[in-house]
Length: 340
Image (cartoon, rainbow, N blue to C red; front, side):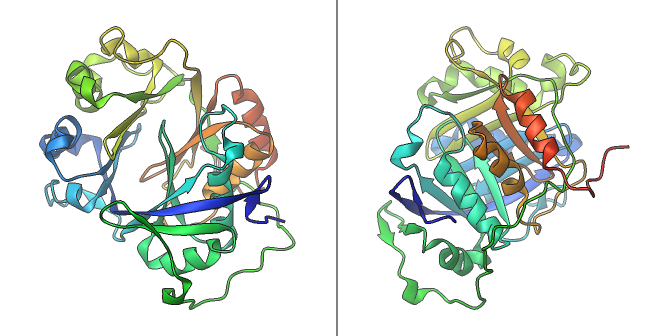
């Protein structure tokens, strides 16, 4: 039974002040938004945007962006926007998370599983620095009622101050789902692992001018400056700029575009991706992240988790990929739809 503590330590949850939009654009339409995206990336310090994440997959470009940044994007039908506002949860790592492992902390994994048990849909974004779990604004009251027995919940004010959330102001309109006894969580979506190797790293904002050309080439002209993906490889790039902290997920072949020494690669391990879903996953289904992260967490396999508009993506160490795939295959349900 989950007690709301990890190895005896109480957990703390911050509801950040960002109100986010999630959007997607097709590859052929990127040029319609390139001016705004360049401004949000290379000139972000001159905008009011504090939460911006851009991810390229083989199928689309996904954007997570706050209301200030969203106002910078052209209002066009080519931009597919998920219609609800999303709030940002940040689970503060407990002392037991300081074990040297990268990726999702034990605290964040606990958060994901608690929300899955209550059938609350989430959208997950791991960065080099931390993990964010997004929930619909309309689900906020349910989220607080679900998590308050396990977390000390704080709301971030405009000035950055964290104040405790008072349950007296939270409406409890539906009963929580009983979670005992624990039910199995079979994996219900197809997954596969491309052959790419990825680097997950941070970027220094003050060095942005030195890597701006590389970022432009990667984000907007990858077909011109990179060879076509090898057989078994997929195009994937994720750049996040959140409260002036920059995070990059890039495959090793793309590193050649960066000036020598501009990206820290010497001591970093490389990661393999597990892509979840061969069809668009949508935004209403709950428990997808928990189906993947729970069995890997039980085996102490570090991971990052990045949701996009169409699919989800888990990154595990290249040393763990075979073991991780074996674990996940053992958890697959009988009704998984395979690729034809």
